[in-house]
Length: 165
Length: 436
Image (tube, rainbow over all chains, first blue to last red; front, side, top):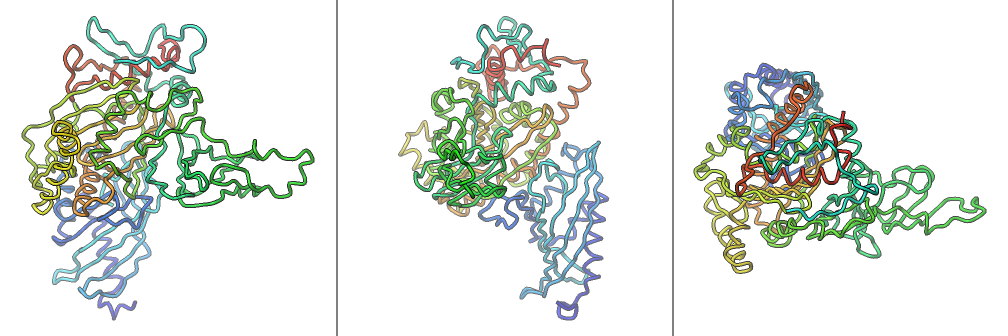
C-alpha cells in the first residue's frame, strides 16, 4: 500500500513505534499509557493459539484501557514482585508494513518484534509479530489497538509475560 | 486421614528413611521439611521412579478429543506420549510415542485428527488403536514379523473420571477411583457446579521456572500467601469495584492418598454462580438462573458449596484443579531438581452464555495466567525460595501452621497431607543421609 493512499509514510509510523519502544525501555509507563486512546485494547494471545479471539479463547493478556491502567499502576508499584526491581528491556521493531486506512480512518500496521529482557542473571527473549491500529490526531498518532502475537511455541524459556511487550 | 496405599516400588522389607526429610512431630505440633528435598539430584531421581512412575497422572481432558481419530500429544512426567480416540473402539488410548521398530516419534503434531500414525523414518504405520498396519518390504523378514507384538505400546494403565483422563506407568496401581479417595467428591463439585458438561477453552499456558516442583504444589493450595504476595491483584479488584470485606475464610482438608483441598469464601465473583457488580446487571438473571438450577438439582447446601465457595484442589502428586474466579486445570513436572514445567488449561461449562464466558476468561487471565497480575509474582516467590535454599545455613522449612486446630484455608494442613504421602512413597529415598 502506498504512503499516498494511507496519508502517512512508513517512516512516520516507524518513528512513532520507536518512540513507544523507548518509553517502555525507560519504564516511562505513565507517558506510554498516554499513547493509548481510552477505548484502546492491548492483547497477547496464548502461544498455541496466536489467532485467539478474546471473546471465546484464553489469551495471555486481554487488557481494555482500565486494565491497562491497572497494569501500569501495578508495574509502577513496589509490589509487582516479578518486576521489582524492574528488568532491563530492549524493544526492537523490524519489517514494518502499513495497510490502508479502514472505514473508521484507522491505519493497520504490522511489524516484527524482538523484546529482550534481562533481570538478575537471566536473559529472556520474546519474538513475534505486532498488529497495531493507529489513529491520526492533531498531536500525532494514537494507539487504538495493539496485539503481540508470539512466535515462540511456549513460555518455557521466559517463564511469564510480566513486562509489557 | 491416610489410607496408606502401598508403595508399589518398595523393595522387600521396610523401606523407610532413618533420618526422614519430612518430620511430622505430633507431640510438639511441628512439621518440618528438609530443604534438600527441593535441591538434591538424588531426591529428584528417586521422585521420577517412586512418585511419577507409580502414581496416576493427569493426561488430558476427554473434551480435547471428541471425535474418532482426534489426538493430542504432550509429555507425561517428561515421557513422550499421545492420547487418541480410537476410530474403531471410540476408546481413549494413551500410547508411548515411539515407533516399535527403531524408536522415532510416530505422532509429531501437538493436536489433530488422524486415521494412521506413520513413522517417517522407515514408514512403519499404526492405526488409532495402536495396531501395526504397514511395514515396507516386509518380505525381508524371513522369520516373519509378529504384527500383534509390534503394535504401539500403551501406557500401562488408563482410566477417566468425569472427563479427566489419567494414566499410570505402574501396571499394578489401584484403580483410579480408589486412588482419588476423598478428592473424587471435589471433582464432582467442580464438574456438577459447571452444569455437568465441561470443556477446555482454546489457549494453553505453558511456562517453566527455576524452582522445585513441590514449591508450586504448595503455592497452588496456599491461602496464607494471597494477601501478602498478591497485593497488586487485590488492589486491582478494588479498582474495578469488588468489595474485599469478608476476606478469605474457610478450611483446609486432607482428602487421603496425598490429595488435599482448601475450601473458602472469597471477595471475587464466580461465573457459576456468585454475582458481583463487575459481571454487569445483564448477567444477573443468568447467574440467578444457574444458581437456582443447582439448588433444584443438588439442594441448598450443596448448591451453596458449588456456587459460593472456592476450591483449590490438589490431586497427588501433580494435578491442581483450582475452582476460584475461573477454573484452572494445571499439571506440573520436575524436569530438574530446580526446574518445574507447568501446563495449564481453563475448564468451563460447555454452552456457556457468551457474556459469562467472557467474564470467566477475563478472570482467568488477570489472576491465573502468566501475563496476569498474580502468577508472575508467585513465580518470583518460588524462584526466590529456591535461591534461598542454595546458601545452606538454614536446613528446614516450617509447615506447622494450623496444627492442633481445625485447620483453616490459610493454614498448611493441605500441604502436610501432600508431604506425608510424599515421604511414604519415597521411603528410604527421602533420607537426609542419602540426599545431597
